Length: 90
Image (cartoon, rainbow, N blue to C red; front, side, top):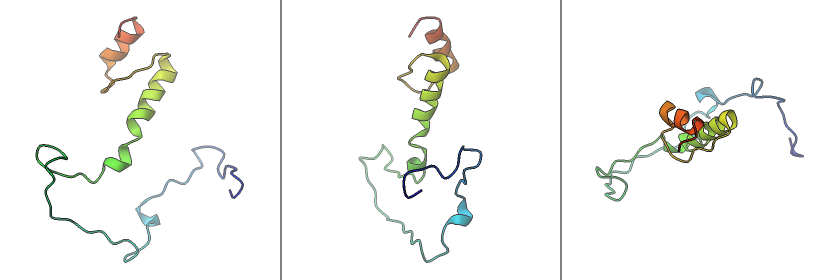
């Protein structure tokens, strides 16, 4: 690993971190800020799960591209869009 080699040979053997792998408190200190930011969205709400899903849309889009040979550039990626692209439409 120190030289850039792979530790696991495939994703089946890769250890996916779970909540039990997180250090026990007080190693992580979370806090809430009671403030409103009207620039975020119309209601000023803040989400806490966005960072974990940022790459998912790109991964699904790339998987669809590899499966079909068509590059999809808009979301959501629906069956109708896939059928239209495979039929030669956009």
